Length: 88
Image (cartoon, rainbow, N blue to C red; front, top):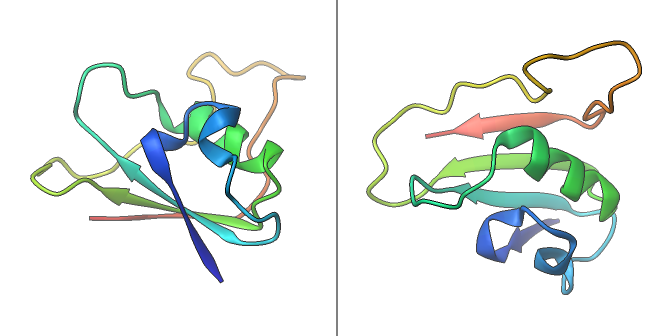
């Protein structure tokens, strides 16, 4: 099952009603204050998601293209280890 995640999925509180084991549906917004995909991915992982669907917000025209990792990744940094798919 797919579980929608409100408020961008950036912090643990966004997953309060999320059921572990679901696929997280996270809307990516172009609004100020939205976090990057690595932050969303790690929060979903911590909430027990088995996968992530990143989706463009209505009205957002930019393609989703990003690595789901820290830009300056170094050995030992956390990685998102569950399947992720971006849809526009």
